[in-house]
Structures are given as structure tokens and as C-alpha cells.
Image (tube, rainbow, N blue to C red; front, side, top):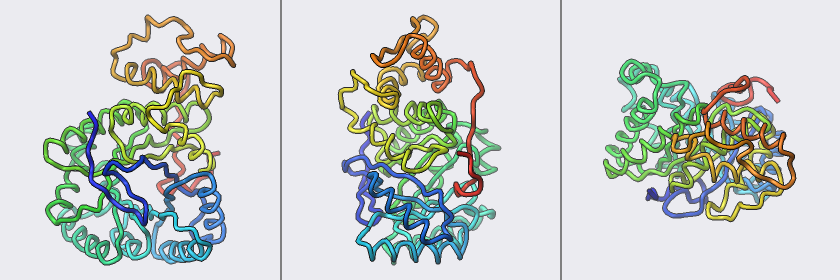
Length: 347
């Protein structure tokens, strides 16, 4: 299926509605360090980032975000800034007056479920006044308790958590919303997004989708997990924007993510390990994730590249099989530097 979505704007960037798929990232600077954050945003723009997210944990970060935005605009940089908010509806409301887009998580937006409609109505009003869009960002690791009680920690639960919030958006006539369902488990991530795409089509919803695999890690393992999940969905026409999540400098996320596009590019002759990761993900990931390819019958190595030895390619194939959760031959790293990405330095 090719998913049809409506257009949502983050600043001047059009997301969905048939517009080009955009590549984004997240700063790993302390938002309170305005100069450092501005410098990193500038570096990310030079790498080709089309949108940048910054952790926004409270009122102090909102003030800093406003200063960062002002300094960037004075330098002629109008890249959309996204406020990443957890655990505080009031912070989301303040951030909506400053940021181009605000990310909220249904798992921690409000501790009081009975107030969600009221709080969202207030947030929508502020967003309308300031031309701010939202992302409803569901995480596999932080589903609301009532969802866990009914659906467990599953793809169905992730989908339902998103649909509850999207239904409120539609009821309150607030269309300026992007939605994401993220997991560190590539199969769960793909299943959840496919299910949401099907459910939204049945419900005549057309919200744009942001794709990502959380806590991927770094180096080849992290790149493979992100590529396997994101590329499988992009091939199916699902996804309007994405972020590669690596425990590395955000510039690395952009450099690698740009290799995913365009979806129709000929990747039959990879000339580097990063290109091989992308090429192999396009060719093998969907079948390995879905079980339509019997990995046990594949000859080793089943991936070819002129720059690598047979032993190196065999090792690569085992990493690809692990990223698609076919077989585990080494420890799996779940790499999370905290909700705001700045709490721990894991690189």
C-alpha cells in the first residue's frame, strides 16, 4: 500500500501530502547551553538536516529554546525546531508558543487520564494561535497503563494508544498532527506502523507518519536496526519523515539517513559499509522480518560487496539476521541516553 496523508507544516517544512520524505535528527546538547545548541543546529543544517528536535524538560528549556530559535533566525537559518516534551502538559503548552512543532508522548502527557481531553483542547488552542504542529509520539517502552492492562506491551497496544489521541484530534478539528510508533524491536515497530496505517485508512484518517527505531545503538548494529525498520516501511509507501537514532553525534544520523532516499534508487553496487547496510535492508529486510525468506536456507554470505572479504560479509549477514530478529548470536544493546537524549553520554 502507498499511504495517502495530508500535509502538516513544521515551520516552512511540509510533511506528508505527497511532499518529499524529510530527514530529521535530535540535538544531544544541553538545551540550556544556548550557544552550544545553536552551533550544533548550524552544523546539522550543513549536513542536510531538515528538522531538529531539542529536549524541552521544563520552563527553563522553553526559554532557552526561544533564544536558540532567535539566534538561528538572526543568522538566516529557519530550520524547524521541535520541542521534545515528556511528563509535563504545561511545558508542552509553553513550548507550543515557541517551537515550530511539539512532540508529546501519550504514555506520560498526563498522569490523570480524565484530564487528557481538557489538556489537549488547551494545547490545540495555543498551537492554532502560534501555527505550531504536534507529533503524537508513542513509544513501545512507555505505553499508558490502561493500554498495557488491555493489550499488553504489543504492536496492537501502540496502535491503540495513538488512535486514542488521534480520535481526540479529529473530534476537536485539529489536523496539524504527525504520529509516530517507535520501538527498539524492529518487528514490533514495523507491525505497529503497518497496523496503524491500516486502521487509519479504515477510519478515514490521513495523518502523516514519522518513522524511527528507538535505542538502536551505534556503529553497524545501530545502523542496521534503523535501516531494517525504516526502509521496510518506506518500501511499502508508509512514512513521511524519519529519524535514524544512533548513540553517536547527530550529524552521523543525518549522513546515514540521507542514504535511504530516494526509495527507488538503484543500490545494486554498494561501495561502502553504510551503502551496503542500506542496500541489504532494501533487498532482504522485508522478507526476513515477515518470515517469507527462510534464513536457515540462505547460503553464507548471502550479501555481496566487492570491498569486503567472505568472512567480513558472513559477519555482516549475521548482524543483519539479528537486526531482523531472526537469530541472536551476540548481545543486543538497548542504548537510551534518557528521554531527552542528554542525560547520559553513551558514545
